[in-house]
Amino acid sequence: MSTANTVSQENQSNLVPMMIIGGLFAIFGFITWVNGPLIPAMQSICQLSDAASFLVASASYISFCVMALPASYVLRKIGYKRGMSLGLFLMAAGALVFVPAAWTRIYPLFLAGIFIQGTGMTLLQTAANPYITILGPIESGAKRIAIMGICNKAAGAIGSVIFGTLLLAGMKEKNELLASVSGAEKEALLDSMASGVVAPYVGMAIVLALFGLLIRKAPITDLETTEETAEGEAVKTSIFQFPHLWLGVLTLFTYVGAEVIAGDSIIKYGIALGLENSEFFGSFTLIAMIITYLLGVFLIPKYITQETALKISAGLGIVLSFAILTTTGFISVLFVASLGIANALVWPAIWPLALNGLGKFTKTASALLIMGISGGAVIPPLYGALVGSKKSALLASGVLESTADATAATSSYWILLPCYAMILYYAFAGHKMGLKKA
Image (cartoon, rainbow, N blue to C red; front, top):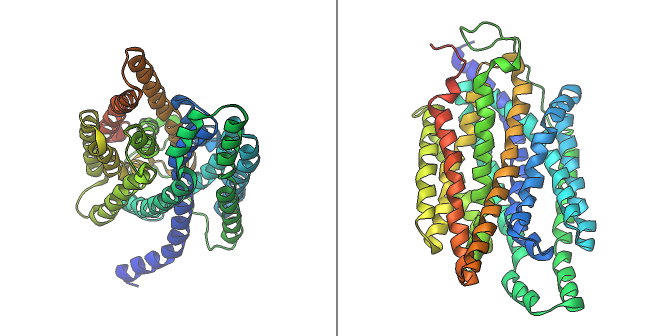
């Protein structure tokens, strides 16, 4: 049999698993990017500070740090297929927690539901990312993950628009009304706003549970990794012998923090600037990412390497961050949305670079990389705290509240600069650490 025929058969045999994994990427893309409109909705419903509202992102992303290694253990025990099914059922359970949370308006209960959903996504991510990375040559891993990213962000854009419409319609008027009422009237209005959360999350739970049942019948088989490490390397005996992996974990930590800020803060940023239709701004970032993913599929690895894509992405992130800091109004919002271009190929590039030469350690390494997603739990609340602190200082100095909101939100985006600096270091040098030079 010719080599061409063999490659063709391998591509055909990989097509169905890729389509299934693409569906899973779409599901957790939808769930993840709902956080964008959920943050301002929770801030109003539960009467939260800026910093406290970003705990919505923290509750979701901290689960990746806490549950990644247990997820790896579960996958080793029950396999990819049953692990993915369990993840979907957990996500459905988390969505149902929103029902009593909405009835009681207890913010920690909302956060518990988000954490449970994050636990389910941890199982899915821990299985899906290494699966798609090793489902073909490592040098084209970024291309396959970019295809998954299109599924992820397209679903995320849809989720952001749908839930933005459902949760934030008339929010400006409701907030103005809240400021003018008190006592029982205010409580009744808050209860009414909270009740709007129930139907969308019950619907989400039903869909996720159905997918959990369907995935049990899906034609997915386990992919086994070999004992081999990088070519020319001595056989490694410990996960701690791969410094390029650990630097990859740190880089993913900073990257996810930057990506979550770009995606989850843009709606609040538009509101702070007093712009109309801010509830749709989250889709701008996602559309920018989808377009860049398409470019990645076309360019990698035929025209540019994964390393080059990462270098360009990091450099562009630094340039766009400076642009946000030096502009205002809708132009500044567009620069925040343009971070989607800088962010899109970072995740697809880091995974194959970090897993290069891991061999039998691939599953454990994947769990560690998933733990890096916890950057989304740490860095966005820091941004929220910076906004709150700056706003308080401006109000104390006599600045009008509307001006303080806009200035504080814009100036706090400086936190993105060290994130992209870390990505740039990994692109140039970090991914080579500890690997034998060719």
